[in-house]
Image: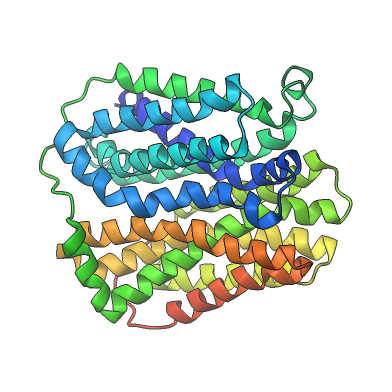
Length: 382
């Protein structure tokens, strides 16, 4: 069963490649001579796809099967990575490729979580799913570091900012072939949520507040992944060092926090409060604009950011478990916060506000901390 689950773990690994679009925005900004706001369109087009294609992806999975949706998502990602690998695209064509990457990654998210049950031994699903999220974190951290590393490796340096795409393409192809050879009897009991039934839940304040929380959390995470590298470069760090001590350290700490959380048994709301407080403290340190406090803030923020999603998701589902499918659809659509919130921070950065622009993720986590203090302590464990 462990071997059978390998293609799905590999699919989660390549999901993390989409997170590299934040760190890559700096190189794209320089290559195309863009403003920080325009360069942030890379992350915008990745995450807006989650808002548009999450529920349709669930409906499509019910018709063609989860394995086929995985293959479709990987196929789209192969196309998205192949174009900048073989040609030097204009900025518009690059954005089209990034949007396709966003659609493909949305399909991977929609299909990857439920299909893990089909390849897991009895009683191993939750453990395998937690481990899969760790693999996604490894993909995020590794791909973000590659963005800076390729600039100093002779073979890839000749391609300039595009040098990372052949590596991403290779991983996508490996994942596609791996899933293609997977033999699986899919469960057909899952009924994907309808758009209408999902949106009706927004009328209930408890769910509206939770969805807004996911929206702001993802937006804050992308802000740090996108802007930490240029922030450290402004301190005098070389590009590769800025990538290592900025987005790579942040995403690496995220991964560590997610993998560690799987071994902890703690009330979900308590864990949510601790995570929100740590995240807020981390961003506050970055707001100081001081080099060493910023590095400390990256680590503290990474630990705080790591488990907001699973804790808030578990707490929200506990409110109405009989409508978990509809709530899941809303949560995935809220990932679109990664498209909108960084645009606000990009505008502040273009205005010359420097470290003060981190007020955007600070406000996001202030909201999450307030949200974590609301409600009763339900018996939900991490």
